[in-house]
Image 1 (cartoon, rainbow, N blue to C red):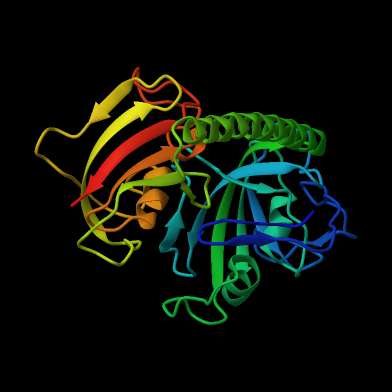
Image 2 (tube, rainbow, N blue to C red):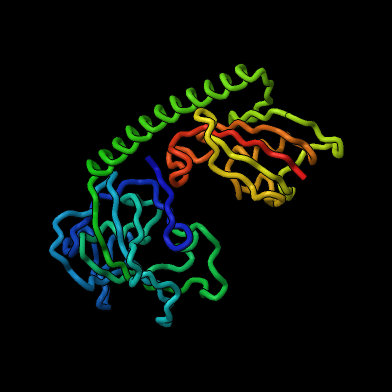
Length: 308
């Protein structure tokens, strides 16, 4: 599986496998020792270990790693600093797509390690961040990136977590589907019992015109601000849970997510001056959360509205 994850703005990792190298990289077949106090991999990545921890495992392909970082320019001015953040960056274990990149550096570290890496600015922004290099960063310059490694997770842990999340999602989807079926049945039963004809919206809400408008011929559109009175009831129980104060109108923009989905969609089936019923399945109302003590979880709702 290939991934793209945020690292600063965008940290992209994918491609060719790299086997984890010895942290100290003492083998001449895997690294060379430049004249400075930096080590160098065969791919040309220069680095210096700041803290050598007691970690025992390198990042595992298919696993997940967390780390903090700081980025400096060639004059040691800090460009980005995440070292003091309470939350580390988290990405799948990286794979290489180019030589001498920070992806290779991450694979040199274990939990608790810290290291300083020298990176080509053009390559870092083009290949890793996948964005245009800022003009204030000199072309061809060397950037310094400090990496402080956090927790690392094995492929088995990642696979197990994903499997558990998928199982939970399937269970939740099945449960939501059953609730929606019950809500839909309750709405249809109400319409039949009261000899009403409703117009459905795409989310399963139904709108019943009680008194058509005599002042407007056009439907309310998304983004339009309207004023309405309302009485809200639990559809199945019939008990009232809310109403607009006498003589006052509730004002809101339709279709902007400031009200429940059933309202956003239902009012677009109406015109100014209409009096109507809006029957809303719970998934387009307050869902499994409910709303305080007035609206229980998974409750379909009925609103009687009159638009100004």
